[in-house]
Length: 297
Ligand code: C5P
Ligand code: MG
Image (cartoon, rainbow, N blue to C red; front, side, top):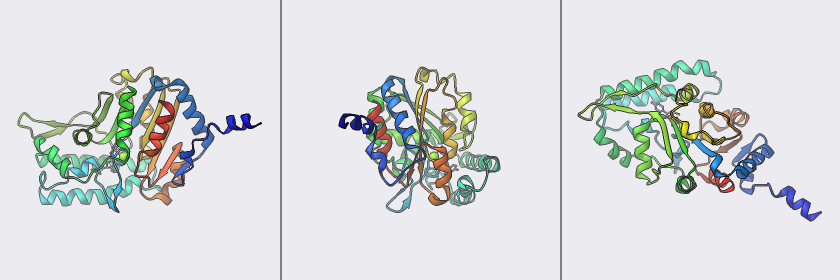
């Protein structure tokens, strides 16, 4: 009897019992993790959002910047523009996270927000050679435990696709300055287009905002061929729009979604629990993704 009992409880992953971890269906989560473990790291890919998923939302009670907000620095833009960027944030961020608005209602606002900020940055003639400095001077931080996460994936040759509606040049610099820019990294983001003198003149390709990740992933499907043959997906995000990041994965077998709920926790808890397999409430660490990886690789 003891042996059977042991077998039945073997699948319990104790770290998932922490108070900040919420799950709609815990047994499904554990079954998925064990299915991924059986298939091994050769079948796994990780798809992660960047801002407020790989980076911290807050530290010592202070909000930390997204990649766009790292650029809101007087070294790059004038005083009027810093004010304008802050106003746009105060207007549109509440819409982005408002649980009472539908996706369709949010869409046009998101396009306007991103478009206006990108136009402002172009108009301010941002210099490429200043980016490393503004990142260094910013308060942006990767989540606690980030090194274990990035190093573990690289060591086991598990591809990590970072899929960000932020600014690619800035997020690359954050990763580089934290010494975790490993060869298993793939990035889809809004990249800046500089002229031959190193001045920003445009943004490249299709605009990515928080709620069009489905369209974007489908248009990148061929470029992501390297990820074929990896039917198990660990997906990390902080926005409901991030759930679509795996829509381009052909022949997916097991998808486990982890959502960081950083802000408006009470108002959004229910929708997050209904949408992500695991929801982490105000958790500023990579502990849970690292525990999951430890079970799979
Ligand atoms: O990497 P991720 O997809 O999370 O990046 C997008 C995030 O950047 C959005 O969730 C949004 O809140 C934020 N953002 C911002 N300033 C902008 C546009 C987006 O802080 N101008
Ligand atoms: Mg995000």
